[in-house]
Length: 260
Image (cartoon, rainbow, N blue to C red):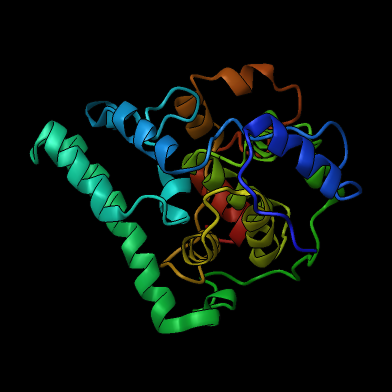
């Protein structure tokens, strides 16, 4: 199917896409609140106060740039984002350093992609633990965001509704899917790429490999304390499920990877 790329007001575009893609979705079709285009990118860059970037790791109230969709689609370049921040806030300070460091990660992923090409979709290194027999499909309860775990379900619902997900929540979800549900990382990679507005082949695939340990020195995993810390306990208070993350890290390592 080839879509008509004629520019339209958002309401008209929503109506056109709902009709053109009928049968490809369930429920009421809605547009992401994230607006596209150069003007929207410039407005977002102007709104971003890098001095508050120190709170970026907090999932529910962290101050993040939300520039990644525009960078991903070439609406805004890494150099433009960096130079705009330098012009407004100078070059000194921990938050500025951290933001520029994140921009550098974008460039790093692209350099890896240039070197490896489609090899990023296969294990780059061996697992740092004895891998299980991986599931090759997304479990139905996960796909429907009905695991009963608020931290997982809320994350996936946000992804479906907005096309965006906080980086910390992406890491938690990836670790849950790979290490707790034993789903091969490529399944999660395809899920994210299908829904993320900033879905970019190298950072997406390589970040999933980083969690799985095929592009890192160890697997990434987390516990309940980490979720509570970076959500102010909001999700945990609402969760009635038996929490698989409510353990010390050494207990989780033994359970997930057979490590003492």
